[in-house]
Amino acid sequence: MPTPLDHEFVRSAARAAYRRAAPLAARPDEEPAGATHRVLARRVRTLVAAYRSPDSALHGSERAVAAAMSHLGALRAAQTTTGLFAGGDNVQSPPDSAFTVNDVCDAHVLAAGAGPELRDVTAALAEIAGAASGSLLTGGVHTPNHRWELCAALARLHRSFPDDRLLARVEEWLAEGVDIDAEGLYSERSANYAAHVSNPSLLLLADVLGRAGLLAAVERNLATTLDLIRPDGTVETVHSRRQDQNHPFPLAPYLPHYRLLAIRTGRGDFARVARLAATGGIDDPDLLAETLLTPDLCRTLPAPATETLPRDRYLTTARLAQRASAIAHTVVYGGSDVPEHRRIRSGLACNPTFLRLFAGDAVLDAVRLSRGFFDLGPFRAADVRRPADNRYRLTQTLTAAYYQPLPKDERRDDGVYRLVDDGRFSASMAFPDRPRDEVSHTTRVEVDLREDGADLRIDISGPRVPWALELTFRPGGVPEGAVPIGDGRWCLTTGPMTYRVGDDEIRVEAGVEAGEPLAGPDRSDLLRYDPGQDHTVVGGTDATTGNRVYLGGHGPHTLTVALRARRPAPVV
Image (cartoon, rainbow, N blue to C red):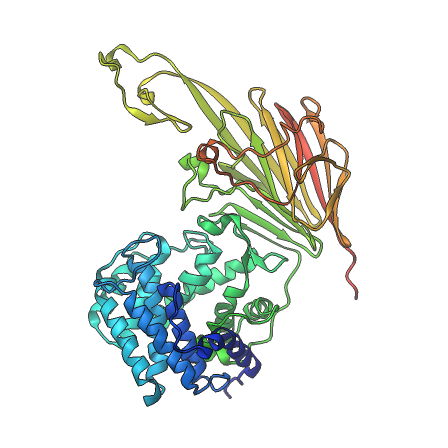
């Protein structure tokens, strides 16, 4: 017996599409000025879906068709002689154009099945797709996820306009292998690109090509993402190598993927997350087209599985650990790329946050540690060990050098030497050819995860340098027991403090096992976050915002910090 349809889900998707399409259909002849090619194509896809769907208030609307034609005219005008689209910071970009062509091809499938009313729309879409086909067939990429977006566009082109050359090119890209690691993370470790690019592209390729292995890759990624969902309905991004590493990412974009895989596999854990992703209502105007293109999405979800608590997971490839209980959700991270590459760069995991703690509405968003050692930036673990279950040891040793005179056989009469980067600055001094006197500084953070929080032991060794531990709490509460020092900052010494939001709270208590007394509130010059010279040399920062509580002093130090979540007992 076939699974019944989820009519409310489809109606919700139709309402979301209507909210985008209705203003466009109300002014169908208006020139869509200022819209990028990607926006134009996405609007056309939504307008055609709204026209086609019986659940849409624009079903059969001539005004929706007219608005689609106006947008297609603007889209064709944005297409260059190469068939690629103008606009954006990537010039003559095959992958950027692939995003647009994917929507064009989806709209073509929807329009082609609608009859004579959409004949002109179908023809315009075919013309745009055909003009882009050659450049996408031969074009290149510059990020890992671009490969799958481009492949999806080639597969969609083949779906509507069969051409074996398109499939051959897809196979050439796929022969590199999908960049998913042993833990189920894509190489960019980005929630944004997993949800918006890699997963939907691989799902499309699996359907068009009949490749079960691609479907399995998506299922692995979604299974791992289960352990990255935070209590506030976002997906953890601290380990990402892309722009989202410093921003929360909502769960909602994962909705169609969890829903589809739950329906096709019967997985109750995926069904639970699909429902969770729709908790705040469905506001994605693109979902309606997906329900028409992939009818399985419209079927009723299987029974959701109950979340098991407590739960812990350590992702070895990203060096990311989390422990979730009914009281607290704690994240420990030591997988930055900066210690190895010794630079801040787009495409590297650079976030120096090494711990987060969620206690209901009381949230410790970031724990970071600055050191005043040659301006080399905050603590980012170069090594993570797991000496016991739920216990992690994060370590980083920084080394800087003073250079001796060049050996006799390396000297030049003209005094002109190679311009070399030594890892912290550059100079025409041929650093690798010189003897060096090294200065080292080691930071070790041991974290013991508990059901109600975490115990930290921080050991700072090496020369006497300033340091500051920063605890950034999400706005909404006030640190009680810490001394305000201005600009949203507080000072904590060895007394306890509590951050309370409603009935939820996080208690912090620090103690010094070795070293000088901690800095008091009169030393606000020490109690600050220092992003390091890679940011400050260009006037930038990666500092957090929120209520920031500091402990600091001059090392060496051995410090303990107890973090405890407290929440009301659940009502039975």
